[in-house]
Amino acid sequence: MRIIRRCLRFAVLAFAVSLLSTHAQQSEPSPKPNLPLGIAAKQPVFAGACKACPWGILAKVTADALSYYGYHTTICWVCWSNYGPREMADKTKPVLPEGVADGGVGEYTEPPPDAVPDISATSESNLLDAWNGTGPYAKDGKQRRNYRVVAVIRTTTYMLAAASKRSGITSLTQIKNRQQPTWIVGGNDEIFKYYGIDVNDLKAKGGGIMPTTASREKRASADVFLGTGLLANTPEQRSWYEASQLNDLVFLDFDEPLIQQLARVPGFVRATVPLALFRGVDRPIPTVMRPNHFIYVRDDAPDDFTYAVAKALDEHRELFQMQLEPWYYDPKTVAVSAVISLAGGATKYYKEKDYVK
Image (cartoon, rainbow, N blue to C red; front, top):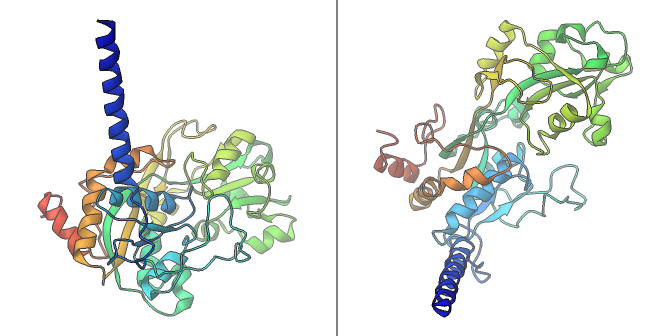
């Protein structure tokens, strides 16, 4: 009987190992070095961001999901900020952004691939700016209208404001007339304008905007913290992670007219910061958040590819649950894009699933 039990245990273990091996082979197909990068060779290039950045995470999820259908995706880990939307629309090869142009890429990045990206991810607000030629794209003097959305993925990044307890600041209205040096981590032009905060005036008083190159202890010792955030150690959000632990913060309220103004900015909606989101959040706080992020292509992407991407993300939505940042795949909103049209193949898939009519 013992021999039989041992044989059964061995058989079960061998079967489990076989399944894991099969999954590994299925989800991580080998590159095809003799074929060029691109959709036609099932080797698309994804313009993402760093490996611990929100859009880098979406790139990894998409690559892992597509691997189940025979695609091997190459990710650009430095196509962040407004680089990706420009490179996508203009069909230009990725370049190392400023600050890493010397080739000194960090632990979360790699040099970019030598190929034009086929697919990308960014926030709704960022892509709408590129679409309309506004914000950071205004200087380009053109609109970029060749984007098509494949999937709308949601997360929760709240607009936040906080001050160190020792600063004595209890309202953003106090900063304008504050005589002692005021150091701010982050910033937002609309909020600065509303409260009359002038960066040059801050500098004249011995303060200013804290450099991103400052040490984490230096950043955490600032007087005011401002911008979108959540509790994750991403490069974009880590100042909140650090400051809420290394500093005693007082989280501040925004004036109601300002909240209404911010909620009108494309890509933002009203929200409430939940109690205890960070150390120091001792009450629900009315604000806005940026919920929608787009996985998108150009309008020349083949329908069978955008169908495959939509299908892969839907059928492997569990991949979103295992990431640094909380992402949500919601069938009710995955195909809702008010301005930029959905890609044809993605639309076909969502209609088949009754996600759109």
